[in-house]
Length: 245
Ligand code: ADP
Ligand code: MG
Image (spheres, protein in one colour):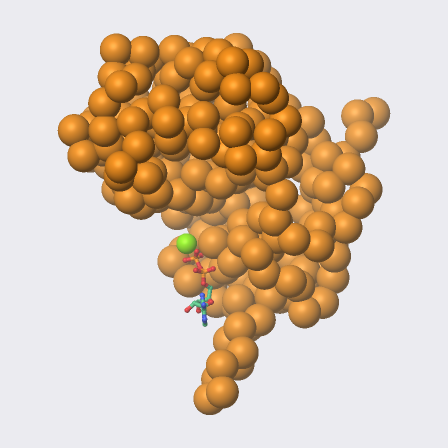
């Protein structure tokens, strides 16, 4: 039995303003093992981003606990890198290489030379070597997301956190990016926690899928995905029925 990497136990998340209390999730539990492509799937507003923020250490649970390798998450750290939906997550005044190397230099785990080597290695992995000296505004949406993925992966985090990273892309590019992510995964078997509201994307990208009910998010079911093309239709229907029951 492999050791759990990330354990989310009974996590209730709440936002408090002076006027309102918003409960984002109610006692959500799940466990992620090394090499999982774990999907949080549910309708808009069910607390997917909030859960990701909590794993990232940006939002403290009101109830429950999140542990990474048995240690309680108490704040952000380079062992959990985030990739967001927005194309503006890159620094516009830095080139592709400078964007990717930035966190490597900031955490000073590596020397300057090694940091640049690592950055260029991952830029190559996402197929952007020719654009390594370009600035973000000259890149397409898909290329910007590749930079963000390279930046996250270059840190070699324990877990990569991806919040609807392909949701703002056109359908064809989105499909290509899903395939590329799977190819990268085949290559390095990193662990990823991936948020989406697309059933199809969840099945394609994930190996395990957690279904969340609408606001406030609660666990509705946990399923294994499938690589078997002939089973995808049935799984889509099953997930649809579970989500909209
Ligand atoms: P999802 O990512 O699944 O769409 P979110 O985690 O963004 O859902 O939001 C869950 C709930 O928490 C929603 O009702 C949302 O309006 C609320 N929420 C999210 N962020 C904040 C915030 N900063 N302040 C108050 N409420 C918030
Ligand atoms: Mg969200």
